[in-house]
Length: 352
Image 1 (spheres, helix red, strand yellow):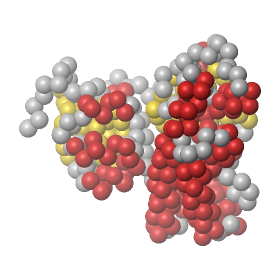
Image 2 (tube, rainbow, N blue to C red):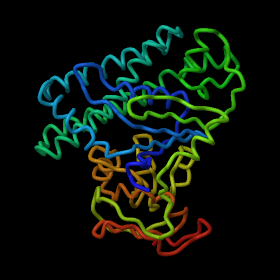
Image 3 (cartoon, helix red, strand yellow):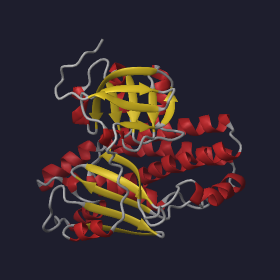
Image 4 (spheres, rainbow, N blue to C red):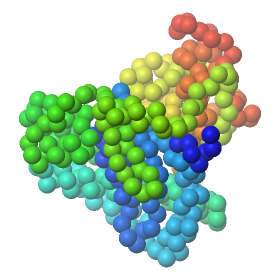
């Protein structure tokens, strides 16, 4: 099986279906002209409030020519100004929804939210392009701030529309956030709930050769069987990755996949997660070290590990599947590895 025919895993996140399909639309549309960078292939599989995204090729290398065009023709300063103006508008639009439960406001919010997600992805690609070509750290730092601001604003503004969802849930007596964006918009337009809705059913969002489609219901299992999804399951008891912050530490593992896992973390634990994010700061302060499946030039774990002075390796791809809660982990950033020293089947562990 070659990488060209296989869907390679990118990220796994806890999410609602409504938010994830809205985000997917933003990634499909990307930014308007004069921006030229578009996604060719992207796959998102949603089930049980978790979404895993896949791609068919190197995300950066497949977009180098378009990034070069935008960087030279639009110019770095104008790109940054567009990002900042759009994020400011996103914040203003979302505040209105706290008080006005109208369909028009919802549609306006969707357009702004999709742009914010596109900015997050675009700034990530552009930082990678600059790193490869000029290694201009000043410009990378600017993009880092934009990326962080966009993530914070995006997360905060989604929370700000919770009153709108609560209003709709009461109006229809239905779990609105279990709908796809298309189903929700149809509900708003027709005032009719979707027939035969199944909570937590598998939903596939697929962008292939620039053409997007969404599958839900009985057909998804047959589609999943045909897709060549990368399997990151590991039979070994160690992983390797990139060093985000140096150090050498040992401690019990805590696997963090959902917010409900946060309560497991105690001082001295090694947090193992797909990727850290701002909501995790309280538990990250407790951690002795951090290990992530994912990682990249602008990732949150790389930044927060340096700020908190925590040993951290990123981009292991399989740490959350390799280790289990209470495994005693040796995290050695000098060798870029994390390995299981002993297995534990309870929360009784020597923390000295």
